Image 1 (cartoon, rainbow, N blue to C red):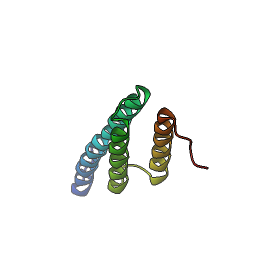
Image 2: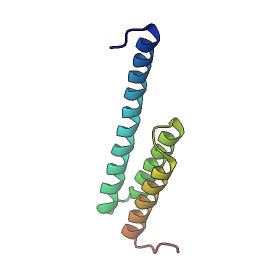
Image 3: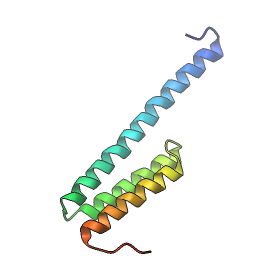
Length: 92
């Protein structure tokens, strides 16, 4: 436990940020699982789920929770899975 006032405040701030970041990360993971499962099942709302997942990923990047390169990688993989499920060819 910190012994100074500033140390105590820094610890409180870090805990608040940790909880907020955890919530945002959990939301991204949840949306990814939903999108991937609907894509595998080839459901009608697969593209809508993918769009929602991409939106959630972008929000996490804007909050500083996730690195933009990781977000780009996740979005690319998700889109590729959707295109394969829909029978579309990937552009080269």
